[in-house]
Image (cartoon, rainbow, N blue to C red; front, side, top):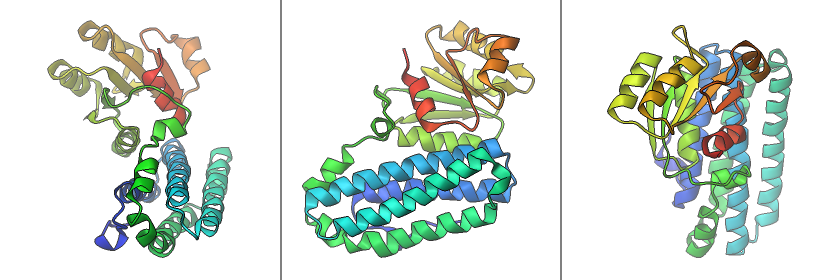
Length: 271
């Protein structure tokens, strides 16, 4: 586990914010490995970490370029090396989870992030603190846009219903990174419906099977309260298997686990 301390702060708000999210994702990788989580959960966390790493490096380079930082080329090369390693690792895990040594993954990710922050990012700190317009330009780049997804996320109020606490926390991290301000959590369908009755939102993300209640049954109960709610189910089954059994029915979208961050973002705002 990595604990956020003042030693990790650069003093550049968006950089520190991005680093906090990366640390949170790294800790979720660590927790998933320690708890022997199913590959669908760990694969989803690793995919989110990959996507946010590429996003963070991209807007960091935007800031360095705008600030006229002399070490941009070296920093960009370091980014290319690190992001390439993360992308390759996630691709290998998605292809065959058993082929990846989990302790190796955990140690590699922890070491590269802490070293990158403390060694490489602090080299540009003074130059970028002296160029606030450069930081503002990079800060304006949104995570959803980097995934090729348009739409307004800040107005969404999302209810997440899943009995896996680690998966719920992963979804919170991703949703907040997308700019969603209001996220409610429930461990099961009855709790979820009770929360929705008290404070209905506009989007529900739920597991396909919850305490014996399939997502389309849960979705029908939600629609009695909020007919226009958007409801997205996540499942370890393929979409084809679900469609052949019961069809999509009252659901707006079904996403397969491990969940792609980009697919999730698109499902939340699709019309």
